[in-house]
Structure formats: C-alpha cells, structure tokens
Amino acid sequence: PAWTLVEGDIHATEPLNTKSVPQPADPTLFYRVKKYPAPNVVLITEDFEDDDGGFTAVNKSTGTTWSWGDPDSGSAGIPNPGGFVDTGNGGAGKCWGTNIGDPGYYLSNTVACLRSPVIDLSDVTTPATLSFAQAIDFDAGHTVVVNIIDDLTDDVIEPAIHTSTDTDITQAYWTTVGGIGISGDALGQSVRIEWRFTGPVGSDYMGAYIDDILVTKPGS
Image (cartoon, rainbow, N blue to C red):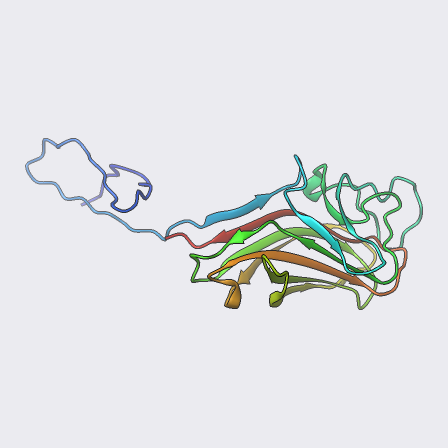
C-alpha cells in the first residue's frame, strides 16, 4: 500500500525527540519514521557587508597589508595585466583584500595575514568544513595559504589546509573555494583561520581578495 505523508521534517529537540499526532479513526494504522543525517551547524558565516566581521589583519613584512572595505582597484583606469577587482563576490559591496584601494597594487616583500575571529571546535571530533570566495591576481610563485592557528599564541597548528595560486594571470574574477576540511590538531580546541598572502616581488597585480566565509561542523 502507498504511504501517506503525515508530517514533514521533524526538527531535533535534544535530549529526546517527540512528535504527537491526533488519534486516527482507523482501527489499525502503521507509521514509518525515516532518519536523515543531521544538517551541518554553522560556526561562522560572513559576507562583510555590514562590518569587517571581526577579522584582523597582521602584516608580517614591510609590504602591503589586508584591508576591509569597497574594492576599487580599477577606478583610476591604470592598465593592469591581470584585470581589476572592483566589487565583492557576486557584485557585493565589500570584502577583504590586499590594498583594496586605488590602484590596488601590492608592494614587494609582502607577507600579510588575515585572521578570523575565534572558532570554538572544543566539541568537534570529526572534520569541520571551510568555504570562501576569492579573487586572486598575483605573479607566478606568489601564494595564498590557509592555515589553522592557535587562538591564543597564533602558532600554526594545521598548516596549508589550502593553497591558492593564480593559474590565469590575465583576469581577476571571483570563484568559490569549498569543501576544505579542518581536522587534525585543530579539533577539540578553539582556533582561528589565517589567510597568508606571500608576494615577494611587487608588480602591477592586485593580490588577494576574500569574501563570503562559511565554516560548518557536522550536525549531531
């Protein structure tokens, strides 16, 4: 026989899930309950439109640092071999970037870190997941490396969980980087995420821009 849907999704209510339905007129009636994986729990979601999201910039060199605001690297009309970044992801107004002003070029000897607010992974035993949007425009050999750092000491505890290199130096378009696992020594404690841009030699390139950060942990 066909099953008739009595109730759609029933949201989890710890520690005991309950659901009551009116007693049917049928003398005999069977119910079937189907279990689905719990949805992921959002730890951080940030589009930077209202403010800087509590992210912090740390300059490790004498070069360019990260800054938050409206990117306008192309407003002066100065030629650039790799294109310009003049919006956030998807045409949004704001983001973080390495020298987001005009003309936006990064300087030689740039080692600049962008760090997230503290993320509590103290109760997480299986990998959390990071995704973000980026627009990158930098020279060969320059990189953006994503590290997981200790929330108090800033020591790197999970290095290079993702590395971005510019494979198309003629454009600077927004793309989404997803499915990055946060695991290992990062689990079971409070951490921060660090985007470290390294540009040893200055050029006409824009650098790195970050937007739409999302960090989730598995539901339970």
